Image 1 (tube, rainbow, N blue to C red):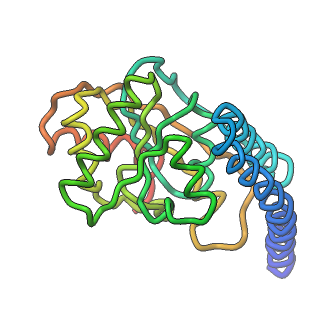
Image 2: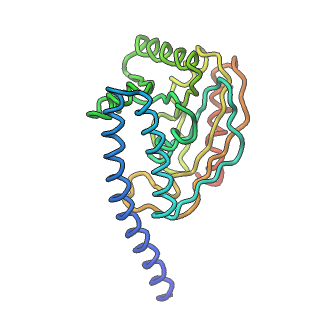
Image 3: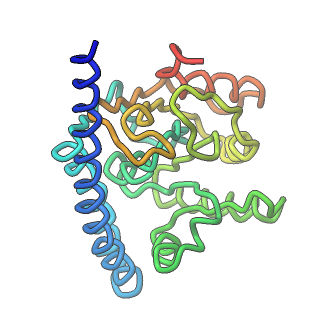
Amino acid sequence: MAAQVRRVDRVIAMAALRTILYRIIFFGGSTLHVITAFLGSIFSVRLMRWTVRCWSRYQTLCARWILGIEIKIDGHIPDKPVLFAIKHESMFETIDMHRFFDYPAVVAKMQLARIPFWGFAARRYGMIFVDRDGGAQSLRKMLAQAKQAIIDERPIVIFPEGTRVDHGQRPALQSGFAGLYKMLRLPVVPIAVDSGKCIPRGSWIFHPGIIRYQIGQEIPAGLQREEIEKRVHSAINALNSGHK
């Protein structure tokens, strides 16, 4: 029993050391990426887009070689206009989206747009910010931005549960998802992710392991709200099926 306790302590200590090293290297490098993206948002959108993709790849490398986290993708991402609905368990997938997709238009909460420097660059990049307290006017603005993204042939990405949740939690979808789905008249591709197992929300220690993405089957446009929410909710939580 004592040997088992010592082994657990060693595992925790190693994870803590890896996490400290990761935070120093990743967040230090992220500062340079954000500064470069901000400068690119002023002088060169192409530079900004390139920097964001490099930042996403940088995160993957840091996670692999420092934290011992591998990324596995099950399924195929379609190359056509669809609405991607993704589970949200950690900051990891928000950055990973820019490696995962080519120049995605990510729907995010308005609070992120108010972050100094980053918020300005994110607007210039073309993220779609939604004010949940803004009512119909906010929804119309979000719709206009989403339609422009479709015209520009950019994939639209939304985290329909609205915010990060602990692995195993299955909150109801935010109402804005169904509204966007109805007005855009696009099929939905749900994506499950279990990043919270390795990068738990609210924990300062990250853990080695495998982060999995599971690409669900395409869901057609035009379904009733209850049906689309039920199918998307089930699909994005597919990797949570063994949890309460």
